[in-house]
Structure formats: C-alpha cells, structure tokens
Length: 303
Image 1 (cartoon, rainbow, N blue to C red):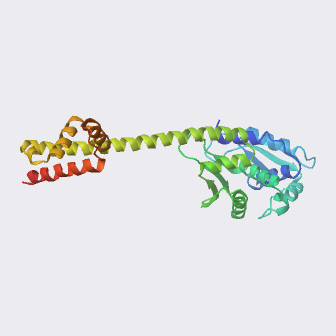
Image 2: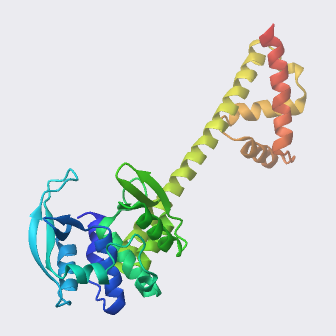
Image 3: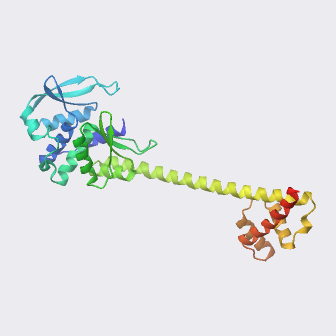
C-alpha cells in the first residue's frame, strides 16, 4: 500500500458531523466531480475513500446514488470506483457549493471546517511520497485556478509555505519541506501517519548527517595524507641531493619526525614532538619548518 493510501485510509476513519462533514464533502466534490450522462459523478481508485464518501452521503436522505466502475485515464490498470448521483443534484449543488468559483466563507469559517475542507481536497486530489523515498514531496493536482489559489491560501494560513505551479491540465500545489509535510499531516488529524513520518524522517536525517560527517572526515584524512606525502617528497629531494645538512637543527628534527610518523597530521605531529622532546612546538611553528624544507627542495628541483 502506498503512503498516500495509508494517509487517506486514516482520514476515512474520522467521524465527522455538522459543518465539518459538509466542508469535507465540499472539498472532495469541488475537486473531483464530473458530469457523466447528465449526472454528477465522483470517483476514486481507493475503495476505502469511496466507502467513506458513501457513509457521509448516506446521512442525507435527500441524496441517492448508484455505484459503477469507470476506466482510469491516469495510465493505471486499476478501475475507478464511481458514485453517480441519481437524486439530490440540486441539494448537492446548493449545500456543497460545487459550482461556485470561490467557496463561500461560511463553509470554512471555523478551524474545524478548514481542516475538514482540506481533508476533502486531499482525499480527492492529494498525494504524498513515502518518507523512505529519495525526496520529501506532498502535492495537490487541482483543475481550476481559483480553487488552487483558494486551497493554497487555506494551507498557508497554517504557515506551510505551499507553492503553486501551473501545469498543462490545471495547477499543482506542493510542499517539499519535511517539517511542513509533517505539520500538514497533523492538521488533517492523521496521528498514526505523523508518527510513521517522523520516525522515518529522524532516521533519514540522522543517517544523512552521519554520511556528511564521514565524508568530511574522509576529506580531512585525504588532505592530511596529501600534505604528508608532499613533505616526504621534498625530504627525498634533499636526501637525493645530500642537502639535509643545509637545514638548521630544529628543521632537521621536524624532518626526522615526519619520516617516522608519515600519516600524522601537523597537529598530531606537533603534539608528538612536544611530548617526546619536552620542547613545545605549535602546529604553526611546525608548518614553518616544513616550509623551509620545501623552499630548499624546490631550489634543487628547479635546477
């Protein structure tokens, strides 16, 4: 089962009443319905979602419907399960405001109504990537521009930083920030999905941080080894040209310690020399001695 289905199935166990129920039904119809054979029709691949809509509609004696299967135009092998309204079209149009370009404010006056409406929109046109996949992504595909802007406004009233993108066949609202996606799941009341999402997100973030630290440590080790090899090459040039005696005693000492501890960093080597000789030398002071070795070696190398 996809994570989108998991979230929708969790929405479908919520018991809603009154205006919150009306808001959810409105959010679904406004972003899903089509006219087939002169009848209002809603559909979904998700059987649980359709069963949920049936339960909600069954609470209105003014509405009757029949069930059918429709072909899916979204390149899916799964048939769409549809509810085709046979009675109550005017009731639906009036109470769920499915024909309004902009939904009346009275349908989303309270926070519960806004959350209900967003649940309906998500059941109808929303999808969300499983946090185990390579990227965090939540989206809504909405046909009408006015509705897309309206839903974006509702979502951003919760500071979700939702972006709007025009597509060939409508509009896409999307969120790519993991913490904002988690906040959305909380807003629509999917506590189980939130726990799963956060558990995977924390694991992924910790793993990515560990990888970054490992990569950083590896890069530091590579730099240490490259620097040490360069110093050893300069030492070899001096040895090949019998020029070691041209160095002062302190620089000769640094040379011998580098030969002895070939993989030590400058910091580590300065600590070793300070400990073994009893004479403190800083990383900067040791680096100065290796610059002397380099300068002398380059004179022979260039000649």
